[in-house]
Image (cartoon, rainbow, N blue to C red; front, top):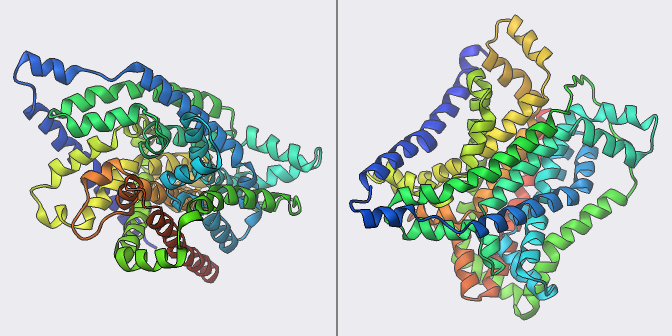
Length: 494
């Protein structure tokens, strides 16, 4: 493939960056100056901030949820590592990522029947049970390239479990920190789970501020305190990640098996994440009738939601890889992730409306929803691509540059191509987050279909448990064939 063909990849990624981020942000900035409060009274109203106690609660719950998810992900990491071949990796990672498709608001409702605990405890548990596959996919994908050989070496002087943890906390501390930071940012801005657990957090108040205020500047001022915990978390992750070393592995080896223990633990996690909440909601539901009725009513919405979210996941990673492949931007990627991750979903939605309201062919098309997801979760693509660039060996890139490739092309053709599991995991994570997003989706919805997340929140408030359960099961059923097809395609392409 020629250099000109490869140049299409970063060019399209930067086009996405302009359409989804730069242009809407510019238009929102214009709207902020146009809507400046005309009087001192309105100015004081626009300057009112949110209670700091809500920020402290959000930081505490987000940190606990991210940490618990990392702990629960350990069996999943080992199972992803054992997958080995590309086709098995796609199948195992895809099936293990199924909990990400299970709406967390439904899980919170189901767990309320099983466990009578305070809302904060249930919120942390639901977050961890929902997002532990994210850590497994990121760390497991990084291990597939850099960790296997060192694991075999560690086994010469230790047993299986100590060797596993030695490699994870020495060589793979960087992807582990990146996964924790990603979850912390997601939970800090999440509205759905705290709302379903009957607790108020900073994101809840921020969404209310964004939807009720007449001044976009008020939402910006209310959101700035989120920079403080994100800055501290980013600094801590960076300092911890400096312990990681660079390793070039040409022929990684397979880890030794732990028998049936690891698959059993992963199966137990899947049971807790999926089966128990669904079982609780099935107590008073005629499942067959609910599935038939729901599919007849919402078949277009379900398939459209899955398709739009999947497309958004791919585009998010594509855009993130384009940003990271450009050396000047790669140096400031941590700052980009920091500023991007704290943007409220409602503020992003307002920016897209301001940008594309004059263009009806976009404003009334599902393209607007895709752009909304890319704008909301584009930082996930940047973070995953930056992680890959840090894990990738510099020697291979330099060899490609000697052959005539530019720095960006070398990153695309060598680093990203050799670390596709991490990028594929990032696309899966971004698609799942887009499927569950509420704040941005509520503002960029289009006439052609209703996103599943909006249907779920509506049925949640109406106590229609039969529709909730049926929607969850139908989404899982619709996603599983895609996973199998992807595994078959990868096997045939090798």
